[in-house]
Image (cartoon, rainbow, N blue to C red; front, side):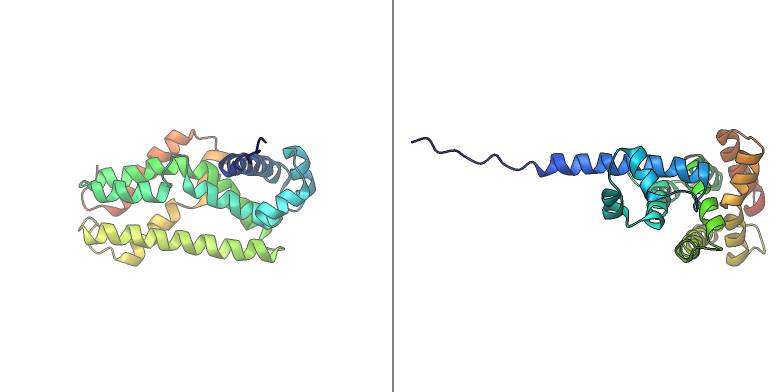
Length: 214
């Protein structure tokens, strides 16, 4: 008598499909949030436009605030196979030239700011009336501040900061030039190409921070 064998369950295929579905949901959510705002965007509309169910959206992201958090986290990772913060750290540790480090940070801005800055501007606008967005704003700003302090310490330890500049001032400068508000002013409102914006950031950091400029 022939014995039937069970087909092995293909978990990797299911995970791949789930990842594609989640990516589609986030793409749709980003478009709707940026077009209509946080308050006017609903999970039901996101699910419908993504071709999935409301239950799937909630299961994957935990609701509207979870979608925004996921968009922020995805933006911070950048577009490479290795997350952008790791690539930035590798670049900074490998570079022996201060100009290379600061202009490298400017180049990373062209990858991250178009993804992260509009989301953070959305979060800032919603934070006044939504507790979840207020909490995310505090977390995101704190994380960015910590990152900029770390970058400033690297410059200080290598002796690259201009005379009389301390860690706090260098952190403030890096914090300012990495702000979503600056991207909003120059790219979204003034129409600068992202490449020009990245070059501006790199050159501005050189002028503001280094002992020997250009």
